[in-house]
Length: 133
Image 1: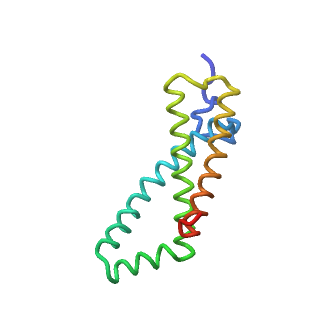
Image 2: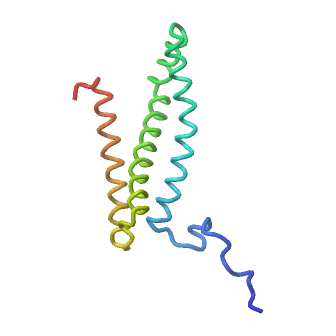
Image 3: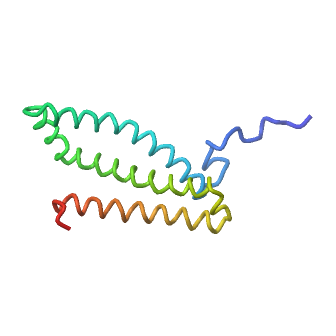
């Protein structure tokens, strides 16, 4: 019987046993952004409730979201949202049977990354300019 102790156990061993590829990295990012967005939903709920309660609650929420750490968190959440959106569309295309050839997989991966960065920057440009863009 062959010695099975030297075989890799799982793809979680990226970098040790398996080589990083755009497909594996984007799959991990998709899962991680899903978790980030699930956690961010609680923050969004807190913000909505604070605004609805008004008064000092609304002022506290405004202070948190307008602070530098608050803006960094909002930027990262918006980046996660855009990535998850575009990569989800990519997965829907795969579910419909499109884009399975390796060049198409790489092209759609780089397209998702480019759309994520561009759309997040546009979103923040519009938000920071007061919607007057």
